[in-house]
Image 1 (tube, helix red, strand yellow):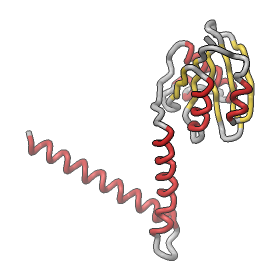
Image 2: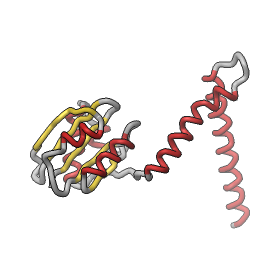
Image 3: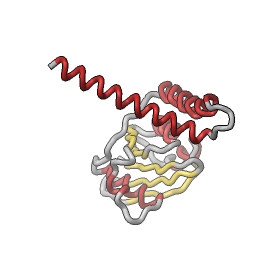
Image 4: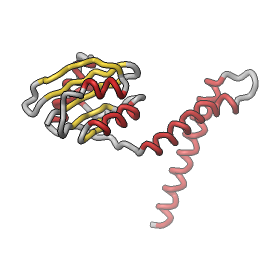
Length: 172
């Protein structure tokens, strides 16, 4: 079974394919598109296990991989210590490291929400970007309003925690 890592970015993707013994079968930098991924993995038939590190563009790449690969693992980027603590970082080295970690079954997994949930989250994120601009008074920079919104949110969280703590204490 080939083990594949795709280090995907907005325009390019670095693909590393290894076998069960850890030998590199293929390294390729290709376009980060469905066609580019399919062409890079065209010679491999049968079950294939792939790993993809989450980033700002992981959703579409994840969807392409589910069409081609047997198993797709989504790696949590902050918990992959072999890459986070590495002194030398490049797409080639990161891709090779993730392929070996996948082969050893040492990938800290992140959950992948359904495509419809991702679309809703994307819409909410887009809306949250525009709210500080619409709510600001004339003449006040949007940056100041954004930090004020964060401070208010933080204060609400602190108050909510305090209320929960009092409720738990009262119940005991």
